[in-house]
Structure formats: C-alpha cells, structure tokens
Amino acid sequence: MTAPDHDAPPGAAPAWVKSARQLDRERRQRRQSVRSGSIATASTILFVVVVAVALTATPGWSRVKETFFDWDEFATAFPDVLSGFWLNVQIFLLAEPVILVLGLLVALARGLRNPLFFPLRALATLYTDVFRGIPTILLVYLVGFGLPALRLEGVPSSPAVLGGFALVLSYSAYVAEVFRSGIDSIHPSQRAAARSLGLSQAQSLRFVVLPQAVRRVVPPLLNDFASLQKDTALVAVLGPLEALRQAQIHSAETFNYTPYLAAAVLFIALTVPMARFTDHLAARAERRRASGGGGK
Amino acid sequence: MKPSKQTGPDTGAEPLLRIEGVWKNYHGHHVLRGVDLEVAPHEVVCLIGASGSGKSTLLRCVNLLETVDDGAIWLGRDEITDVGTDPDEVRRRIGMVFQSYNLFPHMSVLDNITLAPVRAHRWTRRDAEARARELLDRFGLADKAHAYPDRLSGGQQQRVAIIRAMACEPSLLLLDEVTSALDPELVTEVMGIIRELKDSGMTMVLATHEMGFARDIADTVCFLQDGVLLERGPAEQMFTEPREPRTRAFLQRVLESRRL
Ligand SMILES: Nc1ncnc2c1ncn2[C@@H]1O[C@H](COP(=O)(O)OP(=O)(O)OP(=O)(O)O)[C@@H](O)[C@H]1O
Ligand SMILES: [Mg+2]
View (cartoon, each protein chain N blue to C red):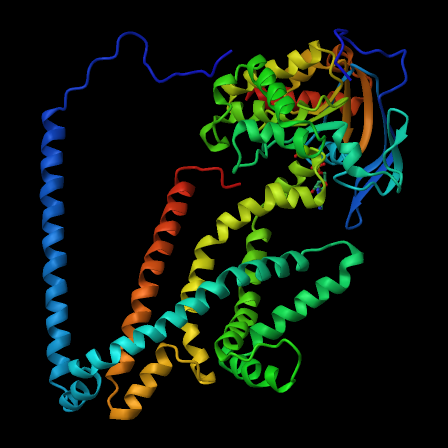
C-alpha cells in the first residue's frame, strides 16, 4: 500500500526538447526583462536629479547646507556620537530579551481560564491597558525621575538602566498584545485535536498552540523591535551619554546641527537591515501560504 | 489493552460505551434530545443522518470536548460525565479523528504521532517512536515519517491522523466524517485503514455520509434526525428494511441525490 503516483502517463514519456515556440518565448521574455531593468534605472536617476535640483534651488538651501550638512562638523562629532550609539545598542540588546519574556508571560496570563488565576489575568489586562496608554517619553520621565525619588533599596540610579526599564515596561505591553493575537489566530480545531489526544490544557498550549503562534508573530515582533531601536534615543532625556545626547552636546557647542545627522545615519544603519529582514520573512511566509502550506 | 483478534461485537459483554438520555443545546437550540446508545466491545457503530442532525456533537460529547446539558455517558464502568472526572484521563482512553485531519502543521508526521504517547502517556521516546514506525509501516506510510503535513495528500494526512489517534491503543475510536474532505480516489485508502482496524477488533463509532461504507463496515447503524436517535439496527436491516418511515425517507433522498 504505497501512495498513488499518477505522474507518469501510460507508455514511455517522450523526451522534452524545447520547441521553437518556447525558445522564441524565452528570447522575448529576456528582452522584456532587460527593457524593464533599463526603465527602472532611468526613472530612478531622473527622480534623484529632479529632487536634488528642486532642493538646491530653494532659497534657504545654502543655510541648510551649512547647518545640517557640514562635513567637518560631521567628522569631529562622529566618534563621540558613535561611542554614544554603543550605549543605545546595549540598552536595546538588554531590553529586547526581557521584553520578549515579559510580553509572553503577560499574554499567557491574559489567556488563563482557571478562576483560581483571576487576579493574575486582571493584573495582566490592567498592565497592557495602562502601559500602552502612556506615551513612551512620559514613561521614561516617570520612571527615570520617579523611581529614584522613592529612595528604595536596590533601585539602580544609572539613567541608562532606568530608561531601559521604562522602555521594557512600555514595549512589553505591545509585545504582549502581539503574542496574544498570535495565540488567538491559531484555529480552535488545533487545540481540540491536542485535547482529544489527552494532552492537558497547558501541554496543548506549549506543544501545539504556542509554537505555531510564535512563528506567526515573528514579522510583527521584528517590527516592534525596529521601533524599539530608535526609541532607545528617548533615554536621552535622562542624560546618559548615548547617541542623541552626544549629538546634542556637540551641536550646543557650535550651533551646527550636523551631529544630529550623524546620529540619524547610525540609527538608519541599524534599522534598515532589520526592516529588510522582516520583509524577507514576511515574503517567505506569504510564499508558504500561497503554495498551499498547512495554514489551518 | 491489546486489540484482540476477535471480530464482530461482543454483545454478551458489558457495553464499552453507554450513552443515556443525553441532551445538548447551543443558545437554547436543542442539538441532542435525549440520545440513548450502547456500544459493545469490538462493535462498529455508524451514525447517519442529515447535516445538522447532531452526529458531530454526539461524538464531541463522548470525547468531553463538549459538556452535556443532561444525561450521562459511561466508558466501561466509569461515568465520564461525572463532575469529578478528569477529562484528560478520559481522552487518553478515547481516540478521535476529525473531518479536517487537524494534524499539527509545525511537526513532522513522526512527531505528530509521538506527541501524545510521550507527553500525555509518559512513554519513553524510544517506545513511542517504535510504536509510531510500526503503525506507519502497517498502513503504508513508512517513507513519510519525516515529512511535514503540508507535503502530504489529503488521504495520507487523514491516515496519519488515524494513526495518531490510535498510537496509544485507545479502547474506543471516534471518527467524524473522516472521508468527507477527500477526493473520491483517496477515500478508498482511508476506508482501507478503518476496515483493518475493525478486523483487529477496535471498537469504533463513526459519523459518515458514505452510506455504502456504513453498510459495508458497520455492525450497527443509528439514524439521527434533529438530535433524536430515531432508529438503530443491524446495518443490513437498516439499509434494506428500516422500520421507521423517516429513516426510509432519508435513505431514499440520499439514494436519489447519488443518481443525479
Ligand atoms: N459550537 C456550536 N455553537 C452553536 N451551534 C452549534 C455548535 N456546534 C454545532 N452547532 C449546531 O448544532 C447542530 C448539529 O451540529 P452537528 O455538527 O452535530 O451536526 P452533524 O450531524 O455533525 O452535521 P454534519 O453532517 O453537517 O457534520 C447544527 O445545527 C449546528 O449548527
Ligand atoms: Mg458533523
């Protein structure tokens, strides 16, 4: 009893030799793709030239050029901004795993059905409601200045740590919602199948629902992380020497804004690869769905 | 509990499954209205009836995926609808297969089959895999052990789902229209596996729209209409001379729709 294979027609299959029609078709396809490539190049060049001309023709251009695109200023500020940027990266790298864990825990707590855990569920709901409602920058102020004011034992005083903590609080609420929508998107029949096999509720969640949900939410999570990367700059209001703060210091000395450009370039350099990676994953998931993958 | 070589129902013995006066309603709409049913060890019972008559609901009640609103269900000596029963423990003794297969898409065929033995029954992975491979071998799927469900045909997926449901040697197997989602030429391969299970003595309750199959495999056929079990009888008699005029009318309708 093996799988039926009806691929081969009865009798010997004739060997395939490309017909003249197919060869001609391929030739025309190649020509077409060369043509669309040249059109894309030409239109891009034209677009850039038009924008550049329009920009430099504006009356204020020479002033803007001096204050935002001063190459010497860029070169002097860049090393300091870069070393400040390393702090942004550190905050990001430490906050990210904590956010993932906390967000997942909150999402799971919100899904608890057992009446015993009602307080936990209520707490998780309150948490997401509150921390998604507060503007992130306000939260950074509240945590950065409010927590130390409590004078509790063991509360760190480093502004970078406090700022990172504020970001964790805010982003965990978003990430929890992402996880929850992922869990909800798994069809109930998957859970029914798991339960019908005798798996407990927790086991069904752990082995059947969560693995599928996590796969589904990777692109939106990466999206959130791209925005976390740039929001590390909000910590600047507490005064640690990260990229934006360094840029502020430099520009305060010279009244030139080019250091901000340096900081912007660094943030872009970090987020663009992440954005492309997200696109890539989303496209791959889309291809899977299109090819009739098991998206039940 | 090893399936014995005996075929045909052991009607003298205590029933393996006993359903007594089961009611179920959704939002005030009665889907099951006092259903009584007994299934003897090694018996194969087919539930037939129009769409919406309550076949799936009855099976889901037996597997405790739904709670009954009245009545009781016994599995062997245990009342499984008792408030104190552990539903997970009951489900470990019952296998269930769904119309839409419901394989876990993120797991290979082998992992789909070994998940419950390892996690719910606490078998060692070794034993579970040995058992899975033995079943895959027996049902002609040995080469698919490491494939993922989306690489299998519908018929293959459904066969894997049946294997998964019986990997832990349940004492009762519930099959809910396991061939309805399949192309006609794939139906036979799934029917083949069910026939084999019957021959090995498995007790089964199946809901089906395939009258030919029901007639062929069932010891007993039950006709449901609007949540009422109107008639039950030996398969042959149910299809040739049903007592109830409504059963006759239903079978007539099915036959006519086939001819069109
Ligand atoms: N979860 C639910 N909520 C509300 N109504 C439901 C639910 N499940 C089933 N029903 C209703 O119960 C009735 C019986 O459904 P059931 O699925 O048991 O019928 P069935 O005999 O299996 O039909 P089919 O042959 O189409 O599978 C239907 O009217 C259906 O709409
Ligand atoms: Mg049904």
